[in-house]
Image 1 (cartoon, one colour):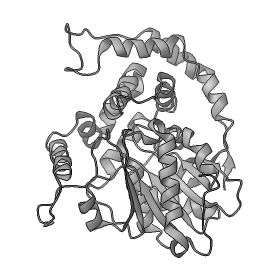
Image 2 (image 1 turned 135 degrees about the vertical axis):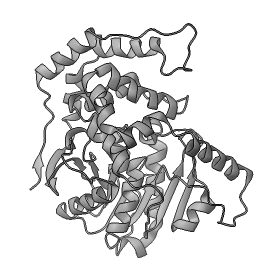
Image 3 (image 1 turned 90 degrees about the horizontal axis):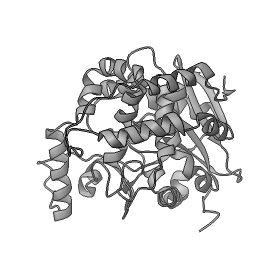
Image 4 (image 1 turned 90 degrees about the vertical axis):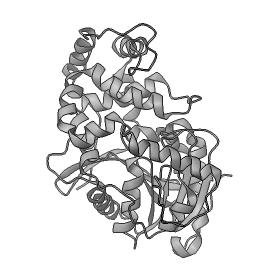
Length: 373
């Protein structure tokens, strides 16, 4: 059963948050530390002060409730999602999946341009936000993909596309593998390509530089990733008990993974952090790092790739083409890991171009031409 869902955070939860923020116990910081030791104290206090004194959750809650929210249960797990229908009845449906430390909120700025031409389904990953927390092992990207296939079937979509970044990329690729009869194509804005010394490819200097960056990350595993992959429950205690802990855990990722020219506002960042805090999903969201298998995911359907210059890594096309049926490849001039928030217009147009470009073979009897250029 699919039921309408309305966000309504209990006032005692908001009062508790304000009280905890007011009683934050701050560490000291060495002089002229910069970010050498971690996230700068002055910047974190600025964000925490804004969260405590100026940020208004109820304002954002009211705005979010203007969107069509729903919940259903699949495989014993609550699934929250937005379902925005296009004004054109023959529109192709596209399911958009976020990653960590993001949420369904990442896609708010692409809803309007994309819904002109596509029906949009925007779920919260199990363990995240209003889909969370999870209560059992095994919610990896493949199980999530099977849940998405069931969700799209319940919504009545016989043919649909998938899009995502970060974990949303892996989930979307896995969805193409578990439901290839219905998934017409997968568009991703994050596609890791691991070095393959046996590939026998003559790579450009740009591609070699990208591989060097990937090798460095593989050798120097980021601390957040190691903690969430190895002991998600342990780090979950600290993040669930301290709003400033949850804030810095996410704010540091946004600071490191976005384009320096990014226009993501403190209000957007704090709404995303508040979603994790108010749903107490720090631990359950971290478990996805623990449960998901490593390595490339098979995907037998057509794939489109958008490469962002300030993302964690940049894909190497010759390696990607060894693994996937690449039909579309874009190199953006700006943007980082949170593409839907940083460059929503560019991403929306790239998604549109990919699915329109698939043509009648993959899409069936109908051609999907954009309503606007």
